[in-house]
Amino acid sequence: MKIKKAHRTDANKITDLTIRSKDFWNYGAEQIAEWKDDLTITSDYIDENQVFKLSVENEIIGFYAFNSQDKNTVKLNFLFVEPKFIGKGYGKILLNDFLKRMEETDYDKITLDADPNVENFYTRAGFKVVGRLQSSIKNRYLPIMEMEIKPAYNNV
Image (cartoon, rainbow, N blue to C red):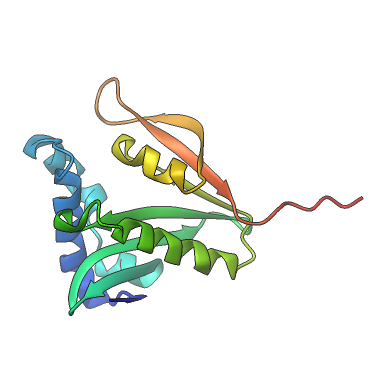
């Protein structure tokens, strides 16, 4: 098992994994089709953001992607696991790898917009819900979640 930076040539495999993983939650083909652009990871996206893949025996089974929002905040944009590996600890492995990388930076805060199906996953990891974002699905809201990485220091 290896976690390493994704290469632009991984874009199609990562996109396919993302769509299969989202489909795991039984949204339906029509809804997945509406989200296709949002779930597509392009070669340019990989070049312009931090994208890390988890591979087992040369098969990509999960990934995460993040980017800087400002000098203090980083946004976790994606964290997906191949459906047959969901519930087996690989999401936690990916999230822990991401959190470890963030500890080595100057960022103070991580933010993310979670799928409602994985809100508890992030809550157990220490994220807090700070708001709700209207989804493209009527009467469905995405939890906006945050975690402080380092304590904020006040000049006294």
